[in-house]
Length: 152
Image 1: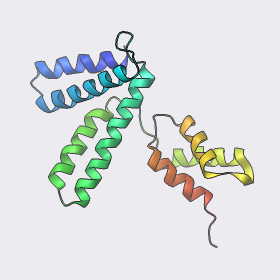
Image 2: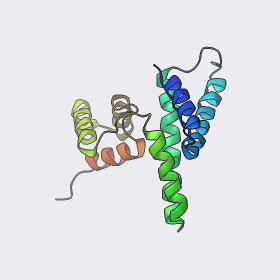
Image 3: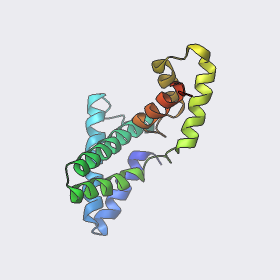
Image 4: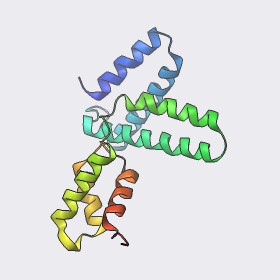
């Protein structure tokens, strides 16, 4: 069963169980997936799981950024709502890699490039390897840390 079918099934279950928060989030996600299908001109064929995963990652990133902005703005109740929505969306995404796993991939990639490892080239290669399993901002931080020489 693909991601789209899973979301539709879970939406029906949430409707039957009167879980209104989940219904709201899943409807929004389904709408975002539908809009992406229109953009890609795939209304009839539907999105592939990889394309749906990209949309879900985008939605998760928006929620993370909104929650951080609300926290900085002194609105913890809105930040909590965004994090709760993020939890619903994360249920459909693959397990995210932890810092140690990302650091290992980055170190392997830097070693592959050798001494002339440029930030952009390393980022591109790492993002292909961790596709959908790590946030780009997080990966960027790890790559910068790895490429910056220690001032010892």
